[in-house]
Image 1 (cartoon, helix red, strand yellow):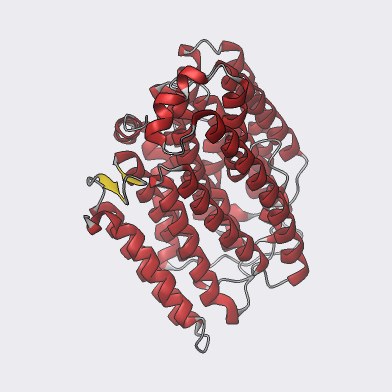
Image 2 (cartoon, helix red, strand yellow):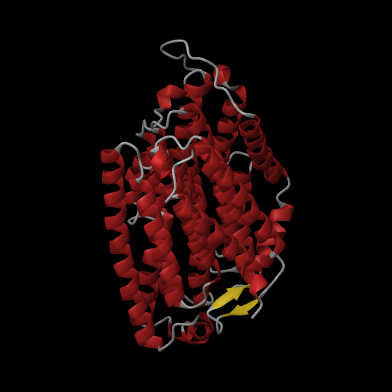
Length: 471
């Protein structure tokens, strides 16, 4: 067996092992942070090194191909960016910093396993490992009551979603007698007309919809975002969505474009997710809760791409997953720097941001415009790909509904920008100090948002080649 194929996973496993040891030693914030950044950077390097490799491992249960490698690179980059936000790790007690880095590494490891798992049981195990890591990360909030309440809701909804998914897997196995994707590719498409298969596949997807915060599996998101430490909320909002998109694409592609009954269910979820998410976001005054409902809306856009069940739709979903990583990270990065004591940020507290930190204000403006789909940004390019794929499939009404939701999302994005650029703070506020690394990160996000929006070809070609590896 070619063990070099597992280099990203082994790097993350090593990082988790190191932090497990450090958790047993005397806390040292600087030591933990510098080791975390180092191991995250090594993970990015390992993922890039293995990007062109491929093969099957563990008797075909684990598949390394271009699709999984692209997802692993995105996960590694997201892990690195989130760790860079943990320079102070405010919101988490200093005694638990090592445990926080340990759980972040374990969760990222589980998500990389999800990207390559081609056996449904292996997929479930990886999904549960990532989910339980996130549950505990939310519980680490220094304000015990807030983190405990959010973590408990997150856990209860997650456990319910897992139970639904396992029931769906039982139906799929009962109808086909197979759990491996290679066999399911041949067995599921001719049986898609059978209620047992279609229902089982939809219930299986329900557990994955929880990860993506699709309606009606989104109720955990606002509370979990609000109750989690700010870097953890960043990880949930930006990085975990990439893994959810990857797994959903693998499962939905099993229908081979023949799932009319499945598509009807996805259409309803997509429409309601977009509408509920955007309308609920308008009423939010807490920045993290607004971002949570925004995530629900963007899950609807992603479902719109996936229900096309075409290579163009799958490429649009993967492209938009990468866009969500960049856009959400930028928004949460600004929030973390403004609320530098780890508190939850109210939108009104952004007043005067353009004077306190012009760079952060510019990054926030571009990220919000990108979330709303204003050109020339990466969000606009992603939405354009999704809408074109849907129109090619004949979903013109869905595209119109999605565009109406884009207009609604622009309204609450402008409310945030109004606070940052037009509102005056109640009392004079000091300038926000930024380290050279923080300035570099903000500039990098600005370049990515605008650069890929103007020239999306490179990323588009990559995701199109990646999705061709799907069933």
